[in-house]
Image (cartoon, rainbow, N blue to C red; front, side):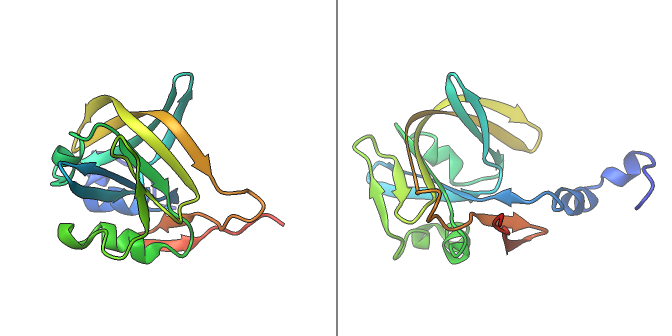
Length: 170
């Protein structure tokens, strides 16, 4: 293991590699805004609180999608399943092609939820916090639905800059 020295070890490339050792799940964050379906993929989804029910995502301040998406009345957050790597890549691609052929439903409040997700949350923005080159977005949950634990696929895992599979317990 590399010895911990000084702040010279904190260059962005080195940090990205170190952060990559921690696997994360991936979610789609989407909504209908002024008649247009907008969304993005995020690998920073975290449960925060049960009372009130809160989750968080972290988004780059350079995101071109978030300024429009944050205007939505409600946001949909879908936990992606193993096998949805192509959907995740599509959500990170050109804006006008992000939802082409992706089965989804839109709630009356405008939250967009992907059909094949493991868990789906209808949310509103609770608070945004400036966090360096990212924005920490706390979302309050209003509705939740999830797959049956016994039959659900494993989640889509992002690890070391690529997608992997979570080994299911025996």
